Image (tube, rainbow, N blue to C red):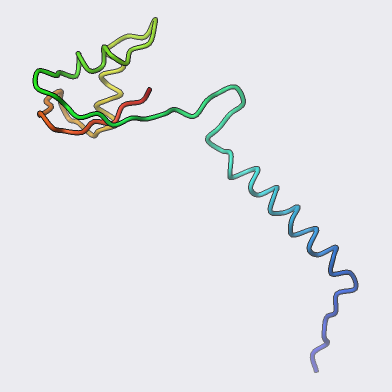
Length: 95
């Protein structure tokens, strides 16, 4: 015959579950965010006539940053194998 299990203090069980939830959320919920770092923002732009990756990247390059690194980042974000882009194509860019 199986012995039935009774909770002597159900509030304690609820408190333990809530604490466990916050611990797990703290470990897994913030794994991409470090203190002092911000989460990058992304925008989508549409390629216009005459645009090149160089001209697009020049609009988003930060001071001291190499424009070639920005171009490489745009290519990686958009799964581009080369620098060929087409009018009307949408590109994701980190700002």
